[in-house]
Amino acid sequence: DAGITQSPRHKVTETGTPVTLRCHQTENHRYMYWYRQDPGHGLRLIHYSYGVKDTDKGEVSDGYSVSRSKTEDFLLTLESATSSQTSVYFCAISATGEAWAEAFFGQGTRLTVV
Amino acid sequence: QQPVQSPQAVILREGEDAVINCSSSKALYSVHWYRQKHGEAPVFLMILLKGGEQKGHEKISASFNEKKQQSSLYLTASQLSYSGTYFCGTETNNYGQNFVFGPGTRLSVLP
Image (cartoon, each protein chain N blue to C red):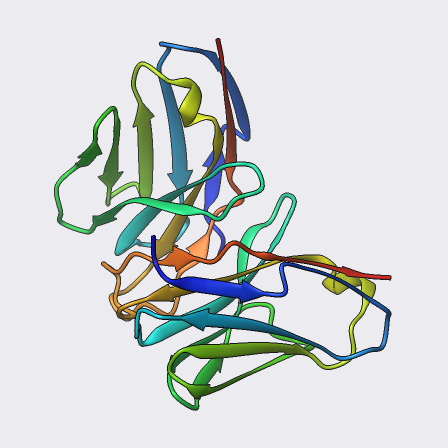
């Protein structure tokens, strides 16, 4: 299994509070991704990173920010959590960003905003 | 733009075959297939590239029709372990950053 760990695995937070999710990899892969998964929508890309301090937005980036200060860590921050951000969040890594590259996913973080 | 998957759900008996389809309105460069079991992370199955060959993995294989912008995943002689949600993901070029997952097809294999 690819060495990718997400923390926390579960979190309940109140509306309006900031929340940070962490993704840690031991594979030294260049690309890291944050997805959210909601019923009927599949996996939707929030943000991705193609190197240290190099990040870009995905299709559902509003309300989220990311940071990558080290190759192994990719942080996702919800600036002010809303109920619409209740979801399961997955981090993924891949060796390259090219079309032939497979992605390895973490076990997910279930976030509930109340 | 998110690809379309069909059917949304399918129920099979062990040993039966199934086909899951993935289609896009845009010209595709690649199609990826993942399987996700309940409560677990998605797991990579295979990638099909434009101009490439049909891929196979044991009793799971897939095809990619570039002209129709669609891919089909074939599950032969289904096993209980095949149960889960199957996602296709598509790219329209080789640069990687336009990858989009479909909504998924839930497959249930019964004894």
